[in-house]
Image 1 (cartoon, rainbow, N blue to C red):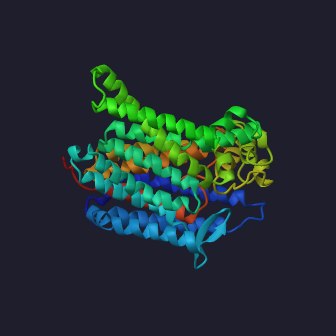
Image 2 (cartoon, rainbow, N blue to C red):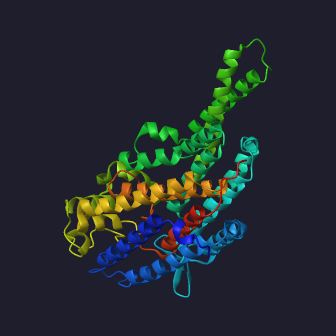
Image 3 (cartoon, one colour):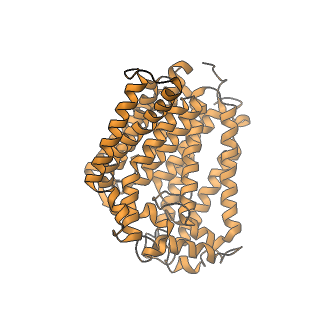
Length: 443
């Protein structure tokens, strides 16, 4: 261990994550006081917190080259682990879980960290000219979405979605051309089109909306596709001068048209099979937040009870272990995905603000590490971790207060889950390591 280790160690980042973990343990205990759920969850969370702290410290003292050298192996192991879970795991609450020696291991959680590091290594070895090349972008897409696609087989929609902000944030900071990123966003929007339409039609119109039914009618889809393909062909012929006498201004217009319509065609081509892959409850959860009362005893129950519980906490809360909604178990999954309402009811608005303050400290320190970073790999890794944490926090708290869809995203360091807690501290270990080493290497 170097002599300057303790002087450079980021204590704010380290202890903020510890405090969040301890808060999580207290409220996991409270969430299970009067339930038939596993009353020893908090004990296991303590064990994983200790293990996570040890792993974070060990990672912080490793040479960065060691972390980079074993990233690919870590990435492959995670993918293999997810595949083993898909084929041999047990069904637990609609998803497959791999149980080894009584411990539930979720390789999907570790795959996020492995992907962040591998994608960062990939971009850090490229020049700006190479990063601007389309082939580099497509390889980055493959690195990110191979594990995401495998995780979707579990099926775990929430974890799959986390890979999107990771990819976009790292790619943007690395200097990937904005047109590639915008095109990708268009693809995502149109890929979600048919699942969105079918779910809206089911939830809010009881499948009786003639207009929405038209959008999923096979004959109508064929006509739209044919029209788009024909207009795309004409645009290509104009742009490549097979049709003469077109001014440069109109060629620019046709280029934009090609850009958008090709994204529409590819996105809709993905949208139809995606509509069949997504489970009905997954699609319902994604849109029920618009009006949970249309299915108050089904898909909307989680959101309604969560909002009620949060509002019941007031300014200072009901007191630890004294939450009326929590102790009567009105909130589903209140030690995992919906632990935020537990904190809000028992610690009130003040307790909720303490949580947000600790998260803010983590982001502030992470940003400082990124700015001072030692090499491009370090900068990209920190950005990827920040994107991961930010998505988890915004999505989890957002779904609890009815502003975001329910996706089964846990709250970092607080929600019950050994694999998730350990992955959070692995991320902290990476950032502590990056904070300790090197001077930026220019490309």
